[in-house]
Image (tube, rainbow, N blue to C red; front, side, top):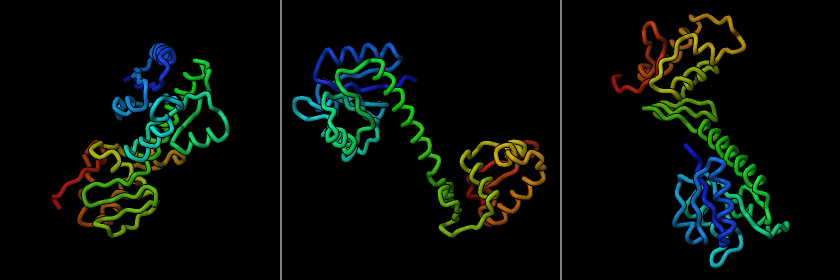
Length: 231
């Protein structure tokens, strides 16, 4: 699926140059000649906005502020402007900009910055998702604090027990063989036995109490996490 970019500039020739080169680079492109039009065109499907600062009507800075504060959007924004003083840079970043390209610009620089900002945005989004609590049935696994709660009551797990439960719960429904669990969680200890996994699973199930059936053994295959109210 192609990344979609919104180009916002009141100069038609700049919009055309950017659209032509971005599409040749494999992106989908929407264009707007004003911030007002851009706000009506913008959608969560856009991966990035190339935004001119000085336009008739609403400025690029103001549009960025509206996207961040009112629409709660974290879409990456690269400002395009002939104003490159320190105060302008600070204003742009405080308005929610991710990067700043001065006019006149090199199209090679634009393409490189676009690629870098989208990649950085994806990495950041991936890390945020990895640290979100896992909520499944009556369990809440706080990945950041390394804590597990059942009905808001803390359950004390060892480090390896927490890692196993987190792995299985993060991929609920998937069956992990003992070899796969060892490969994921004992990378520096290649001689761990299958029995070690069984022992840890048994301990986790014991600590989960009435919710022990969230962890199931698929005979001949391995272990799976699935929420069941049959307790």
